[in-house]
Image (cartoon, rainbow, N blue to C red; front, side, top):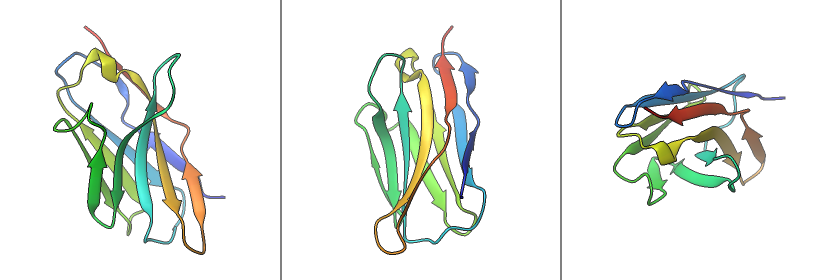
Amino acid sequence: QVQLVESGGGLVQPGGSLRLSCAASEFILSSNTMRWYRQASGKERELVATITAGRTNYADSVKGRFTISGDNAKNTVTLQMNSLKPEDTAMYLCNIWRGSWPTYDYWGQGTQVTVSS
């Protein structure tokens, strides 16, 4: 069973930066979609950023501040987060999904990001 392991979370002051990484435990086929979600305490899970075949998409709340990148050869996806705000505080989870055969839908356990002074 493929596992996704996130890293890079932590405590940062408002205006600071963090870089989240997500790595698959073994090789997975490419032609997939990589996503970062976040879930704040007491709130629903929110899609933050998506990358598919080099095309990226972002939630309005993070546009211009976050950048998603993926490396299918290394089975990794990263999220560079700049100009962090307290409202960015959440558990961040990565997801790698492929809709055509052979399909898969892998999730990480999450990494906590806390933005506070």
